[in-house]
Length: 428
Image: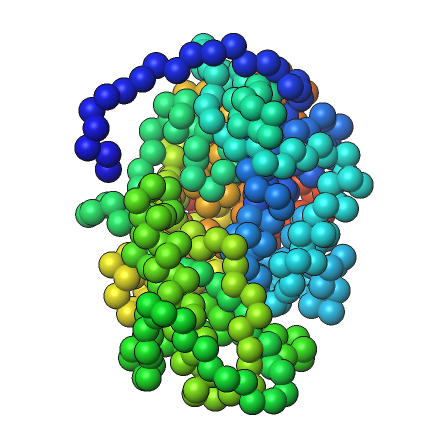
């Protein structure tokens, strides 16, 4: 935190670059799906991405494996069908966990957005929201040509940190209740089997790990699924909140130190023929901010298998809390499956704003289960359709017809699983 008390008022005239029906901020899984689904409803869509690629943590942070959620449906199913066809299950109500190439996913989305008539704007980082009277009027972004405004009728915050919502004054919470600590960050990397002995490398400033107990997570966690000798490694762990300046400064350097140290360890303990070939360009973020929406998904909902009339996503991914203290523990608890209601994406104070992806209204424990990519695709797809219907019907986001929402989602290939025995029908 800065020790300086000086503050500034920064005012300037900002030129409008584009007016769209739906403006989506953030091109991760939720943002990509939201843009596609809104465009399929006939809307002019602008997708603003701060980096050079879509896919979010899947591409930028090389979290290039889809966790199993028990429901392969909608746009997520399309991605599997079109890019990873060998993993496509016959039915929607099955689980898969395919390892994929982040480079191919990046290219896939470039082509997909062209086909879907989505206008993508790269290197556009959110700066602020212009709002009044319960409506977002425009978002100001930093571009290669300076500050520009993107006006819209509906806005979907898919930044992963609820940046737009928070800037507009939407209440939010961070991390666990007792101390605000979030799940730690991880820098993913890939090693390649060269078929011959490699010389272990350990740069200056790194650690020497000799035993599993020495490792940052206290375990070995990696995937090698595709018979191409590519080993995807998830073994670093840094105590940090990815939405904090000082935390991210520390995390980016400490995580890289750990990666080189872990690769060196692996090259001495069973992976003697594997070379370090790719380190993600940024450290992966699991958790930052959660908005306070019309409904907050709770641990009890997840554990009880709650079902909601306004369901927009379903998952049976486990409760998966990497220790916020960065201790060598992970709280992993299986769940049978539950619904995520539309209201978790709706901030009360705004008529034309939704928040989709990991920063929806959920408690620390609940978000540990709903945060994975496949679920974020589902949330984004529902948000895009809801934004389009809200515009068509002249309704506030909170008043979107759930029957109409479900009908359009079905038209776009979404299938919801029937209520399981033992689940709780929530009337909240």
